[in-house]
Amino acid sequence: MKKYIYIFGFIICASFLVSNSAQPGVWNAGGSGAFTLLYPEDTIAYKKIQMKSEAIFMQLYKGFATVKGTYHFKNTASDTLKIKVGYPINTVFENIGFNEYANQVVLDDLYKIKGFVNRKETVLYEKQNAQTNNWYVWEITFPPNKITEFTVYFLVNTNNASTLEGYNSDKKNAFIYLIETGSLWKSPIEKGVFYTQFKDNLSIDNVKTSSPASLYFDRENTILKFSLSDYGKTPDANFVVTYGETLENFNFKKITEKSNYYFNEIDAFSSKEMNLLSFDKIALPNVYKVDGIGNFSIHFLYTFLIYGIPFLLIVLVIIMLRFVYLKFIKKTI
Image (cartoon, rainbow, N blue to C red; front, side):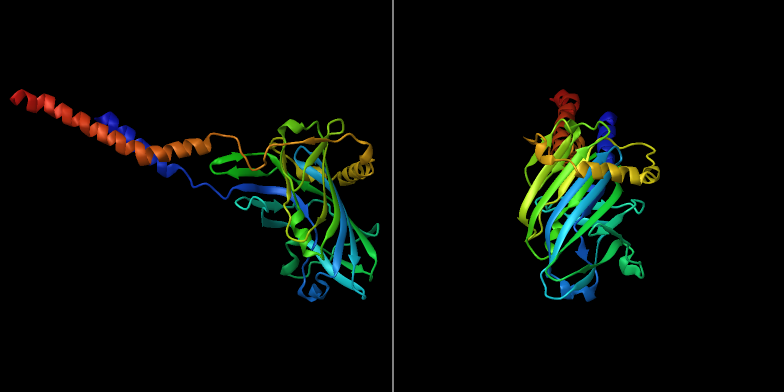
């Protein structure tokens, strides 16, 4: 009897030690997205500036990523518009297409961000109040009916990410490009090309993704690509990628000290004749699906608590009644 009591007591206590599962999704991932309006006084320009195209180049290393984005904007108004644009350092985005999964994007302050307007470097807008503390902001002038090119470079830490699904979790490097924010500009975005190169001998076999379009892979140069057209009319699905393993004692600050080297590397990458490469269609595992037995074990535990314990109690009562019957009642008959 004591053994049964100890077993039941252990199971009941263990159930209280199991924490509730967190919001599923990719957390603490490095990333970026299309630039958005920030200041109320700039709303006069809302939907007057069209993002004509974007070309995004991403190089993923063990623990970090280098990003270069080139955007072409057209001011469709008859007047010159000067607005402040930027994107947040830390934020949580619902994932379009997988609404039950959240994406938290964290951009490290040390990522050496640089912006260029028509290939001329421009300085970050001065942070003068709490409104801009969580943003990197530029003030850009858009002449009427002309194309303005904006190019940005930065390094971002991808090493602190985790993917949660119920009670399972993956500790992987993760990067997110937030395509959904492009819908804030005058639509449509006519063309977007997105190239991701895996460096440091990273294997495509360990990569998981969520992509808004079909993926193609050049195995010789380890480049993953997808393209979009006529989009940005509504929030689009984001590009999410996990890869590699979390590095212990990773020093991201040391990486940022060599930012010029990595920016030169991504300039060379963006200068490749992509049309000459051999891209084949590829299907990769869903980034939100996490390996592990956590969900199964918790499901089994709760199923056992709900159905198993009552069943065992009934069996135990039957055994006890039989014991009483054999020991006392049968002897008196």
